[in-house]
Image (cartoon, rainbow, N blue to C red; front, side, top):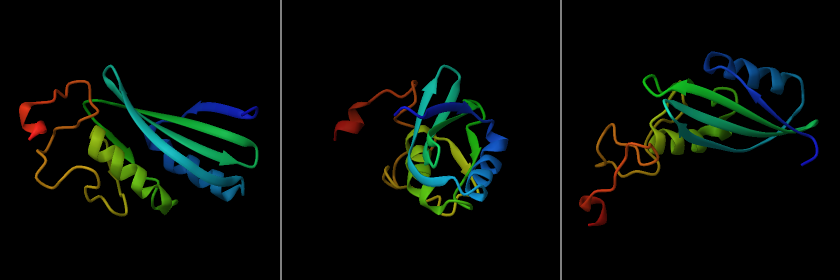
Length: 127
């Protein structure tokens, strides 16, 4: 997309940033959210469409902290993306409107996240 921008926002500022986008009347759509690990950091990418074009926002949190404020109090449609990232990467979204597991079964061990670099598939996973 010709009008595409990438910005970085701190975890403590993401909710404020989304609120300002909504209040400015520029929000059109949260296309998706993705998460990934980069060394000792976990990252969440928010992919927005606005009246000015695409805006991609990166929020990084230390692996040791793994916590970001949820944007669901402002934009409830983010709940499924946040739940997926929470299950697979272990990032806790503070104040998420529905923090239940979504992808992993209830019997999945706590503290084991399949998309983290330290995850290794065991024989148990193939049963």
